[in-house]
Image (tube, rainbow, N blue to C red; front, side, top):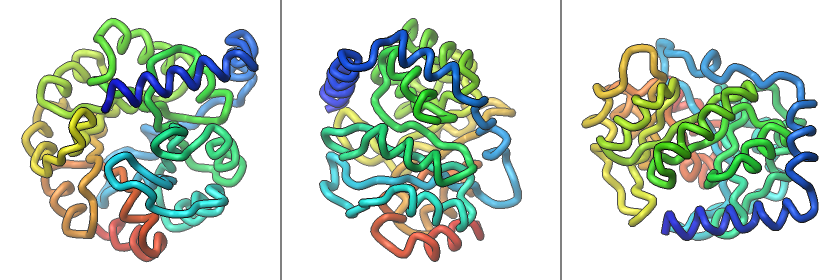
Length: 256
């Protein structure tokens, strides 16, 4: 499944490149005002931080929410205390787009994560051109050399890489990379199976100074509490917010 998702995103990027060349998207990226420092917004605090996601659908759950105006939801997230807004831009299975990210950028003043299956420099330049401050890199999807290249480009453009791992070995690769923001996804994107205890097993592998993000398997406040007790500085939450009252749900998480 992960290989299929990455291949689809790369194919869609190649299609966009036929209309907007790499030179054009690179120029647009460099013309953007400086990206926000996401690490500052996600710095450890006396309560957990929340990366709140604009998420219409997923391969594992199907359609989740009708979100005709992602900017409206993102503005609610910001008003409710989210530290970062994640925007899914994968089109085929998550029903997102770069247009969603651009709309959200105009509506909020906190950092935005481009969440997609990134494997090409063109996609990184697209992210900055659209206004992203962070870009997701999935360790399982990339050989280490490619991961290093994309990680370096994201930082060169002033953005923050969120390096996502799904196992002890992948956390080690993220640490070797020098990642300052590491996400541990309880959902294995190859099988879509959940391992709710993964974060707790690998948290100690991440050195001091790394911002630790727990991803997936957040359905209610008890899940947030479990992640916080295991050492998470932040949680990335999508489904639980878009399928409930986002403001009330977000407020409950921020009390943890």
